[in-house]
Length: 285
Image (cartoon, rainbow, N blue to C red):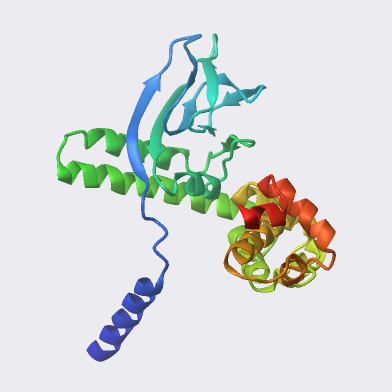
């Protein structure tokens, strides 16, 4: 029995070691909790970090990107770094919220996986609202400037986003009726494009390959990367083409064909749209 337990532990250890090191840089900058007075307002201003609020009670409004969002208990709203925003508590039912300000290499990717983006900065989080409040309170309790409390704050920040990401993954799965989290389908699509960018790829065929419909693939792709699968494919092809123009002696028509374009003129036009110059000028430069 002991031998079996030991072997199982070794297998799990090996699996964990094989996982990609995705969580490399996600840092808590500040956090807080507030019962706002009626009509209490903040902004407009621009933050130097990503900012996420979770509304625990009451209601208010957020103005950003030329849009006005009416928000209430059980919703969360995201303000991207450098984005001008203004938010105000309702005059008759002022809100109470907690917030986290964060930064790091994977901050944008994390917030997208949690269901937020610059174009979709609001989503409901009623199922995990209390859990999120609890984690922020723990961060606030670990306020001392020592290494132990710093690790404690970081640990609760990771749990905060772990809950949000899992909640969004479950919500997306229920809404669409697909078996796997949407990130699985996106990763499969990306992997296929990276290995077949030199072939003719239709997005409808790509969607069929990963087992979803085209509309769903486009929507979840935008949630993860902020662009459509078609735009991602073009960007991928242009990056490969630019590298070949720089590092090989192949002709422009040969390079065009090697990245999936039978028409060299069409390739040159798209290349210029992406790099501001023709393939020939890019090579000369």
